[in-house]
Image 1 (cartoon, rainbow, N blue to C red):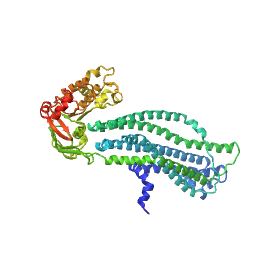
Image 2 (cartoon, rainbow, N blue to C red):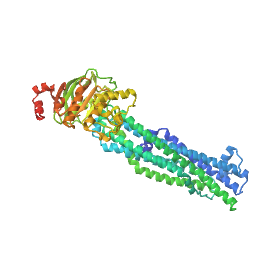
Image 3 (cartoon, rainbow, N blue to C red):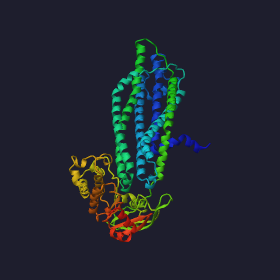
Image 4 (cartoon, rainbow, N blue to C red):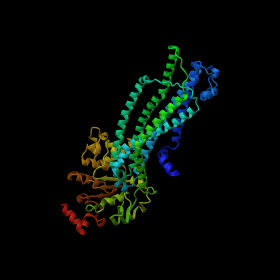
Length: 598
């Protein structure tokens, strides 16, 4: 027998769940077993009860070999087997079962939340560490669907799977007890409890209330998640992925709290059902005895147990079939998580504590998947607090070079040194926290101005002072302070409530709030009109000498004041110098200037 194939076919899913839940699986199985045992013993105690009721035996004859389960319980507890004592004993056992059922249901909800939370948080962490080059080739739709709809289906799969396992455990318990019972008993008591539903109305209202709250929080989570994917490049380049991930985790915790309350209601519904049902059964028995003068005979305990077993066996089949209907989502989640793990970006261990002297590029080259090289033999030094502009036609390698500078991409060959430390040895997360990244489509979050700039930092006096300093440097202080709600004004999705120039100023203010060493600008003003672009450029000029500024620009008017300008062509540095020098020495640069009528 091929044991590996056997384990893969029958325990593949169990192994996956165990990878997240560990010992919790055995706790869940143990409680299911306890529920079945308490239920079976409680049912077995009906035998001496009905014998006493029908006067078929006296107290001394209640325990016989035919009902050894109840005999063992009565003898071990040392109680007098009269009607009242046995009634109380049955009620106690079923109440204990109800308590165990409550614990079982509540623990299942808690473990289910734990399982889904572990999946979501681990995948958020893995996505934050995902290699940017691999991300460029990833289907964004799959990422979004897996994090949202597929996670919900995995949640359903978990529920169906463990219900089927739970029912399987109960089937084993009931069958085992039935084998040891007295098969002479033939009467089965039909439990009537439809009226019990009337007592659930208050609980149903609470469930409906929590369901609405859960929907609202889920909408918020989806909104945050869409922004994380849409703004992945910015968050990755600036080292803010982890911080934004913490915001997502906070929302997950809020959703978990609502689900826990819903779980409490669900557990309570399951816990009180059978104790109330038992009271109904006893009420029917005493009505038959005292009001209708009818004799209630002994019941067939084995039939009850087997009926229970058959019922749960059928339910187990139903749950397993439902599980198979969503097992594809479970398998997709497994492969998706594995891809994120395999695509983790390389990262060094040396902590970056601040830029001191220069960036060095020695014979640096880069290519995507062994295709034509995008960058070739780049040799360059970029000095602290220098303003460097990068120009060139589309496809010259400008953005790729900026991505390497920021650590989004690592060199294919050659060296990239930051203060004599190789980028491969550097802890990239600590390095990126010192980078301000401003792109053509300004990065604006659907939140307040303060939260956009401070990145949800608490509004302490110290942080608020940093906020004011940042917006003053970005030349947007007056605009914000003249708004009705000032820094608490909402910006709308992607900054729909403000102009392009205001978006860019806010983007610059956010990077200044971080107190960065580098300001990287990738076509930061190309989408603006000439007047607004000129105003933004004046703001940038005021920052010159305070930061190491690296600008990619098509409009050459915006980089006339740069300390040096690099002209790139076909992935190489074609010329380098300040504006006046390039006008003298580079024919291609002169042609670019003439085309733009400068």
